[in-house]
Length: 227
Image 1 (cartoon, one colour):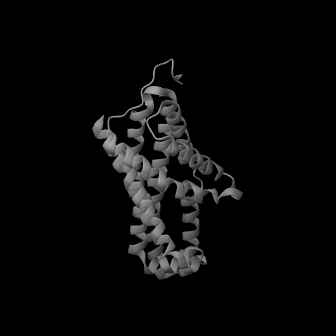
Image 2 (tube, helix red, strand yellow):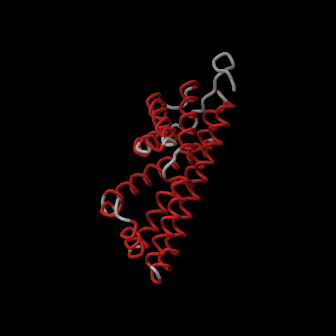
Image 3 (cartoon, helix red, strand yellow):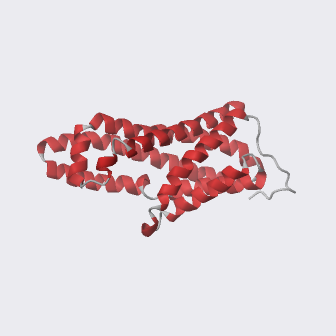
C-alpha cells in the first residue's frame, strides 16, 4: 500500500511539473505562433520539429503515463468509504489517461508526417495538419469531459470519507465542473480553469500522498453509504 501511495504522489508531482513546463513554454517560446495562421504554425513546426516533439512528449505522454499510478493510488486511498463511486471515478480517470497518451502519440507521429509533406507541398502539409489537429483536439485537446468527471467524483468521495484536505476537494470540484463545461463550444474557455487549477491540485495531492503514505480513508457503513 505504501509503495502505491508514494508512486501516486510522485505521479501527481510529475504531472504538476509537466503542466508548469508545458505552460511556461507555451507562454514564452511558443506564444508568437499559438494563434498564428495555419500555414505559419506548420512552418514553425517543421523548422522546430524536435522542440515541438519534446513539448508534446512532456505535456501528453509523460503526464499521461504518470496519471495511471496517481489514479490507482487515489483509488486505494479512498475506495473503502465509497467503493462503487471510486470504481466509476477510476474508470473515467483511466479513460482520460488513455486519451491523453493517444493524443500525445498522434501529435508526435504527426510532426514527422507534416515535416515530410512540407518539403514537397506546403499547402498539402497545412491541410493535413488541420485535419490531424482536429482529431487530436477531439480526443483530448479541447473537450475535458473524462478528466472533469474523474476529479469531480474523486473530490466528492474525498469530501465524504476524508483522505485529502478539504481545500483540495473543493478545488477539485471547481476543476471538475470546468472540465465538464468544455463540452459546450461556447464555454471552451473553461478549459483554462481546468488546466491552471490542475497545477495546484496535482501539487497539493502529490505532497499529501508522498508525506502521508499510510493514510487511507476508511469509514464504517454507518458513516458512508457504499455505492
